[in-house]
Image 1: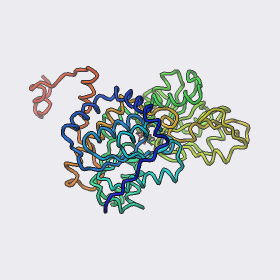
Image 2: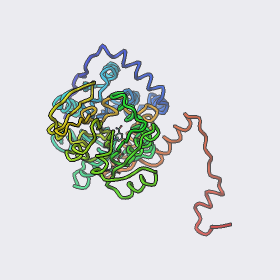
Image 3: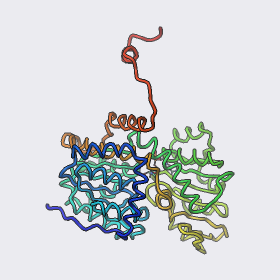
Image 4: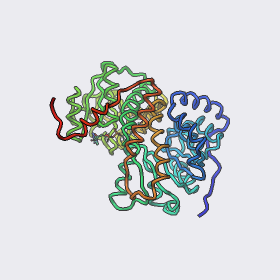
Length: 423
Ligand SMILES: NC(=O)c1ccc[n+]([C@@H]2O[C@H](COP(=O)([O-])OP(=O)(O)OC[C@H]3O[C@@H](n4cnc5c(N)ncnc54)[C@H](O)[C@@H]3O)[C@@H](O)[C@H]2O)c1
């Protein structure tokens, strides 16, 4: 079927100039993408290809889109969350010729309509962040799936969903789990989410972290980052987990680990990063001390049972933008940040450009790899090839001016041998 190309829909095109400054600023911290953009401009590996991107519309995402465009792709961009679009960035990307469909604070219907418009372009590659496009391509929009050669998924929550499609034997094309590249989750999820989550909490509340009890739900890559940053700011950090090994890791890292039923009574600030549902719920709100702050930095807004919090409240106020305070029947006030949406993107700027440089280098190199190899790949979730991951780390180290040693021939032979041990 022929693609339908819809005109961009952004909040205000007059913001494009402001957006350009913001994108240029973050591009200065994205040297790997800059290098790739130069190569792509010469080689045009994406010529004639339509690439759909459903990722938070931030400065870094605009730079990702422009890098693919420099390589010859026609790029279609929509948001991966209703609250995380930077309207100035969206306007700038649209001015540069990216087909952008995203408006900060759009309602769910508009969000869905924007996803559909991107799929109407009948993309060849799909870069997803949370698997909303992938979900549509396997549900209501199978009509748009026939041109899709392959997909790439940016985040843990999306891979979880795509693995469920794979397990049910439904996956229609190969997907690379970009999140599982070491140069992605070890840095973006850990150092990025750690810092930007605390940044968002401070921007919204100006609360003092030193001396506060911070409860981190989930000790995965993001949780490790959030816990480390909170501890670095002087917090007493408590961790909750459902995985025995991760819980043990948190114990050995020096945190107190306990059930949420106990942590709920103790925490001043609660941060969920689990990729699961209703981790904070009615029975926990009832136990929390007066003034407790709750927020989520996981991808979807289901980690905190917000409807239950609203239902339990006898009073609601909004003392600051993005800050909702609920007074419960017991008289205690619980403060919810960013409505339970992913707080570091909804209330701050997401993960720093220097880290997104690696995440998005993996995305574009993954696109190149898929265009060459997808026809021979099974319809399942694949790892990003290790040599790409290593190449991205190598490039990052070079841009940081960091040198490392190389193995000697003797060392290579030793490492490969089975008959050499001690001297
Ligand atoms: N905000 C951001 O910028 C950002 C960046 C990357 C990933 N994410 C999202 O953050 C979430 C976590 O990602 P990750 O990479 O850390 O995942 P992960 O799988 O490494 O870690 C999640 C951890 O949560 C634990 N967990 C699951 N259910 C739990 C529960 N009910 N109570 C306590 N712990 C529970 C799991 O055992 C696991 O250890 C995902 O939704 C991911 O998509 C957000």
